[in-house]
Image (cartoon, rainbow, N blue to C red; front, side, top):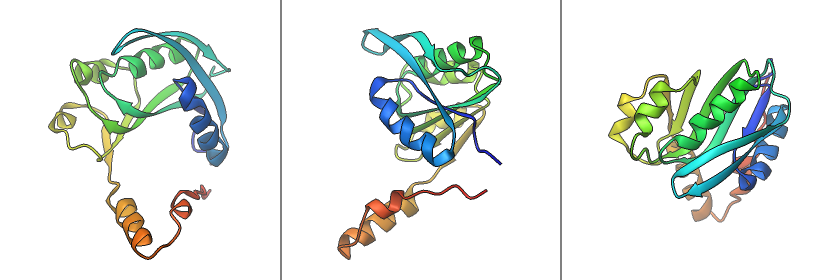
Length: 158
């Protein structure tokens, strides 16, 4: 079973990370070209790649106001994506972020627990993933002078 059919990068810097994740997931890659006019404001400009009829996952390092990911989701759906999922490592959630996420068309929203945020409880369709075991293993490996890169050798089992 293929996990997701598309992995979407929403920043040029994220494209390299997206390519790596797409390879692990054996998925195709689409990129959203955006322009940031002012801090904490973005406008999605173009979807690069075919997303029609595909399940898409947007993976970002940080969600602050949620404007970018929500606009990206709309752009993907307008280009024919079947579903859109949102994943982020750090959920800052300032301003209207909770309202934006609740009003979004995301199938599911996934954050890690790197930032404790009581506002998470107000988000529908939210799943929190713990990084505690990953951090514990990293600390152990550092103390034992072991390899950290092995923590990120991921393989999807079908």
